[in-house]
Image 1 (cartoon, helix red, strand yellow):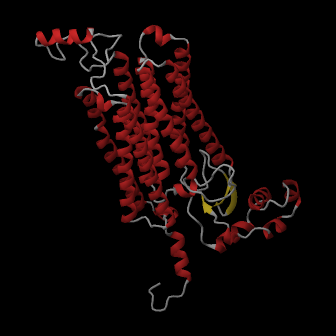
Image 2: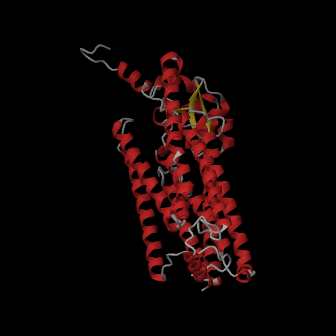
Image 3: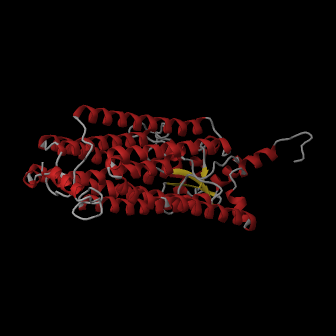
Length: 296
Length: 149
């Protein structure tokens, strides 16, 4: 083998890693640069997450993730804390494993294996993105009743506010707030838990009728949560989702190149390794996004 | 295995056979899954036991952070093969990441100090965001014989 003889001759000259003629890190240029890019990207994500932590530590109250993330597609209003996000986490772990297998197939010059495992990785990435789309959609459009400015209103989680504040235990306060709530908000509030009437029917009712259908004592009404929560959540999970998206695009390009025998002609599948590094990094970042937003 | 593209790179000195590779991947997948399940267990434990924001809760959160770091180690060392690279390469990646130690401590402490200052000088902030404000109100409504309230 040519490599071995080269190494032998270097030994004869008593050279070491840094004397030239050898790659000091024993890696090709692209892979070294991918590692340094990922390191800088780690600092970008780190800065975002630390900024989130800093703001969180500056508040007396912060939303409980078990309250915010308790929905599951098709489960209606069932309280299933962390269930959906654990599905998302496992999807990403499994797609990381399939990527390892794709890279390994590349080492063995196994074109069929590379194609097969890349397709599974792409499917995993798309599944994760779909889950995230559902989660965001649910958080933005799923309205919860909040007590704000002496009135009740129904809001979803947006950059402008979120319904994840403290539980209001004071029933006299809530009854007064209900009496001060305007018609439009009352319709939304009744509609959120009473599905026997259509929106048109409710809109025609008087305020007194609508108020009679609301029992503030057992509705678990909260205050508005810290405004920063929405921005940080959408900003950081969105930035991660964007990484997943670009990872899927890179993997699709790798798949097309593998199919067109580009790597076969080149004699090596090193490009798959670099795409693999990027994909594993996406999984790595999710470990910390998962930790900071959903677990602690 | 020789490196076909660059002869100055001696590709993967520790080349392993198919069986050890498969065992390693399966083992790592199981470890990552088990750690994730344990983390979820702790998260749900804090929720369903209605644990207050005290030292015990902080301890559990600390354990979850350590478990996440273990997960990160396995992903980087095994899946990204950084553990198989030569030492100098590992160091150029790991040593700069040490900045995070200062980064995290410094900024978390900064946020915490801002909270303490606001609680001290901004009474409205303290009262409107106090996590126990409704509990205190509920307590004052109850008649407590002999109580100072």
